[in-house]
Length: 628
Image 1 (cartoon, one colour):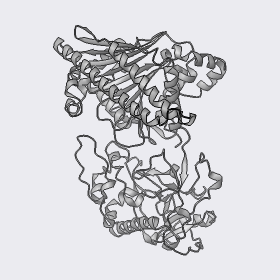
Image 2 (cartoon, rainbow, N blue to C red; image 1 turned 45 degrees about the vertical axis):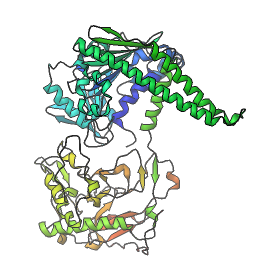
Image 3 (cartoon, rainbow, N blue to C red; image 1 turned 180 degrees about the vertical axis):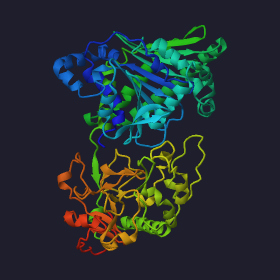
């Protein structure tokens, strides 16, 4: 995986501001009712940005002129490479659906809720084009009769709630959205109301629903003088980018008494800010004095002296602004506003450039790095050998109990593979030890600890008639047994491999794992010592979730799948030698094969009754482990 495809929509939105939105802006569209329907009483808040408004603001005048020099044809050609087209993006809305948020963006965790990222477009998005754009790792799943796209690489869900509205989030968040939209029809959300009234009037709109926040938690952290602000029915801020930039804050209360208390709380907040400013100015003064060691200093000492001076000036300016700030009170509403033009005359340029640069760096072209265990002097590194020993013992115990090795997977009545052989041998891994504390999945808020102490307990928690990525079975992914956890020679810090493994088997006719039926030892006529049972696919880009029925497909008329392949975007591929291949033979021996080992001979080791005579490579002399 090279990029977080589920996050591409956000990157395109920011990119559209900088690069592609120089097409004539559309009239301010009325907020879509379907976007407002996302908000429920649990929704904490949202941030809504109108892309066209930002692009047409004075701060982006230079970029509009710059991009016009490319000409319409070139921009249109680039625009057509994406779905949705960047220049067709109308708005971006980031929604915090509840306080139970584990991640801002889908990051590959199978369980946990994220923010919801909502894109609206000027033209309908074609379903087939969207599925193709997200790539081969994306497929259609269904929950309660509603389809959504599922990006397995990042456990992201993508759903169209309207032909022009796309919602991206973690799968758990998308599933919950489907359920909420099914159950919460007709619920009056204050956020939905403010979105409907104000989203089409402002360049950006930020709204918070205090009622959705756990007040008890805030009481422990929030000064008691500010608690009356939690009584607001809704609080929102609007940003207008015109000839001048204005930021307006508004708070609505249910009663006049609550509004009065809220105003007093804002005054207390202003006093607190004055104290913070005074403390900051004092600290800057001390830094300035420590930097002024002589009456006259050289240019090298200028930065140390200049920084506190600028910081003092900024704090002084902020103090003067807060003093002039007035809080208007009308009926049950409090309002105040700021003119930001004199503070940040180029705010749009700076914010957009920084955001775009940050997300481009986050997404594209993963950086790979290498560890060096593959060139240690011992035949097979001790930690690979130890894991192979655990797996071999489990396979042997399974064979003794069932009369054969496990099938490659469990299957449903239609022949669809559900759960991997790695799940089937869980009860037999128990003899190798209990589940370590660090292997247990972190608990979600208000979640009771699962009763999982051994691998046999873990096995019992699986629903064997459901696929590996069902809403139930996916909760067990984060408890991957130690035996399947092998470090890859090539790593990528952007790829989550916490519950992915390179421990795989060859599957297909003539192998030890041909399919639905298990093979017994008597069928391995080529000899256990010259038949491969398990291989370590030392390739992070082809690691698989350990419960997924995905292994090395073998066929007589096809090349043997590569057990290691340098990623295409590994920047030092020419200088890094291809590592050796590690396998577990059917007699329990862990073996090491050099990359130069003959493929035809290796093919003979994969089959169980091909009659081939294969000379195994001479083992290297064992030595104590080397750490580098």
